[in-house]
Image 1 (cartoon, rainbow, N blue to C red):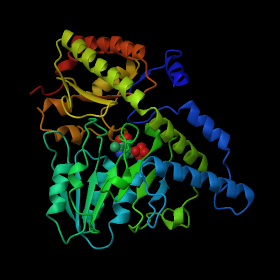
Image 2 (cartoon, rainbow, N blue to C red; image 1 turned 90 degrees about the horizontal axis):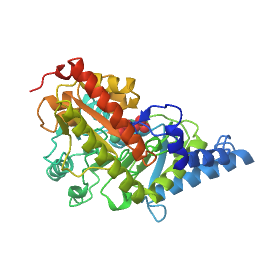
Image 3 (spheres, rainbow, N blue to C red; image 1 turned 90 degrees about the vertical axis):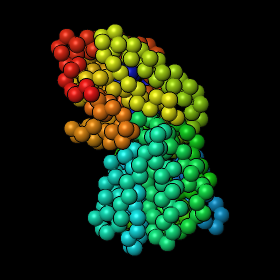
Length: 405
Ligand code: PLP
């Protein structure tokens, strides 16, 4: 990661603390993609096409193996390459649901792509059930209860093991007790989780699993849906590619980069988790102290809960979250109000709002997210800059810009 951190620190570049939205391409991944030189169409029967096909299938197998997919035996799990996690989420939910309307459940901790996929099923006659978050910020216990009491109906559960807004984990364990039934379809969005925790698809009661490598040093423009081998999938885009499950010529170089990025993430996971947890904790401590010095109260969302290492969401009382992110941007720090695809929304993050916190928290919540490539010197510099941002807020009276109840 040395080359990455050097690049980030050069020539007055902004300090990038938005790795939950997208990470820089790891130079080792870039080198692997370049070395593969996989320009040919993997469906072409000539030598160049066959070579591209071999690279594509090798990448597929490597990724499937790393996430514990069944790669041999009577029922082999499938991996469908998509354009990213958004498409993989949609394919996982809409493609497996089948034609007989049942129950579809999602929660406020889910990414917008899952929420809208569930809404599509509701528009088609399914019963939508919003899963309440428990005191730990999880939805799996409620999902387990729903599944256990809905026998005889098709139930599609949308779950997010690591919330992209708050970083709060949600153990899939409560689902393990439910006997595997063909009417229960469990889709997990592991986009934020996969780099940070070991996920074994075959050992979890999952039907499908979505993720994308641009969240862990891989290329953007590609994602994956892992699908249980015995579950039928209706494609959203028809075509002969991906065994008829997703039309469109596969981006072979991106698939090679995807597999390399996941291998690197898995191999470096323990060390990266340790490093990033220390950075995040120092950031939280120091930013809360800095805000306090300027008379601004703060609240770390999910404090005390089981959280992934790389995300923190902190509310600064009275400070509008969008104004804070803009001021930080002007000061040279890239933060976020929430998931990038919702950043234009004037609504506070649903995942924060659903936690039952005081109303000033969702309105003032700002997300910072980290990667192993960040140094503690960068976090220290971000603190100096944020101190100036708080000073500017207080001097301009902006720290009372929203309801502070
Ligand atoms: N799921 C989660 C939890 C995310 O955080 C994101 C994006 O940030 C997505 C899905 C969508 O990913 P993509 O940008 O690959 O479409």
